[in-house]
Length: 29
Image (cartoon, rainbow, N blue to C red; front, side, top):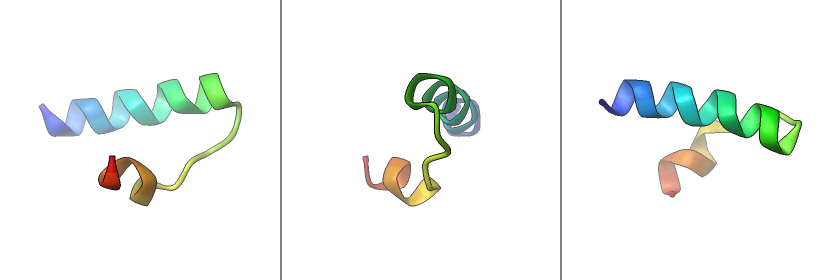
């Protein structure tokens, strides 16, 4: 479950923010 969430968030954030965000930020959240 976590793996899918991480990948989905990463892709969604990339399209939404328009820039790559470090995994640390997501890990903290």
